[in-house]
Amino acid sequence: MDYRENRIQVAMSSTVSDGNFFYEGMVANVSRSGLRISDLPKRFDPHAKKCTTVITGKGESYKLVLEPCWSKDDGLYQEVGFRIISSPLDWALFMDEIDSDDADIWGANA
Image (cartoon, rainbow, N blue to C red; front, side, top):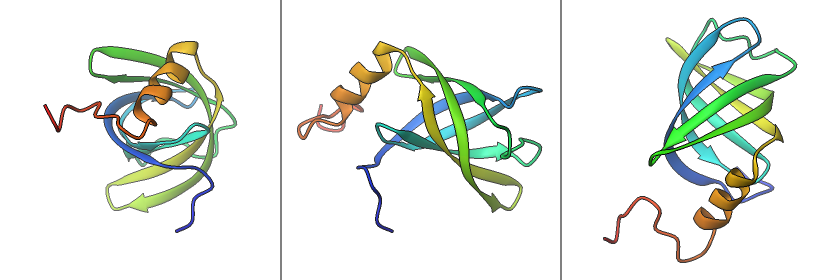
């Protein structure tokens, strides 16, 4: 698949709200303009106009406003691709850190 932006594989937890309920999922990959969350329950509404998420990993938390773009049924769960509508400065700094060529944010080379 040809992506418009570089996707970076991550393993971060996400609590997503579709405006009615909160759901837990895993952030599978991120780019500067979007992200993919997997393991979301089928009850999550991928047609919501706007969602809010808190993404947590490596002791940091980021609150983002998202717009669902696509969803894929994954058996018991679903994965959903989101466009980032609004994010804090800390998220941009995090993306700068993990998107550099020599980044080793998960300590694989430690």
